[in-house]
Length: 142
Image (cartoon, rainbow, N blue to C red):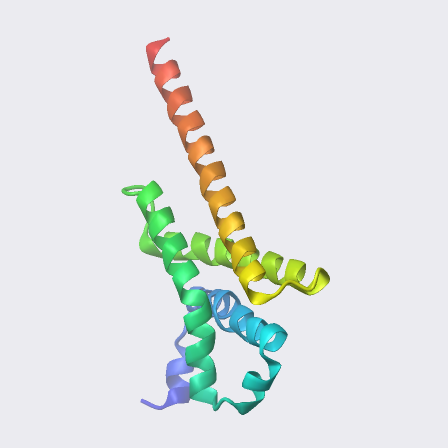
């Protein structure tokens, strides 16, 4: 089969997942490089550029995927977990990049902003999860 015939067989879901993963990995990684090391962005080859971009963003994406999958153990599929984690990862990285651009953060402060946002989101979702569990338990007892 040719590449063109395989591309025609892709469904909308495959294209949407690919686009979401691009927005959660390659795009923020390239913006991080552009903001903090613009000279490195110009000197890297295409394959090395993709590796560096993925290396900057995959740890956060994996952390969010495992967290979402852990929270919804039997309820949702892995595709749902990846979808939610791409949205979470994108929002954390783009917000931290905007803050570092507006207030001229150096890279360690950017990483601190990413960590603070990640920790805040985890605490918020934990509190909402426990509120839901308490509500379920009180509904059963009434």
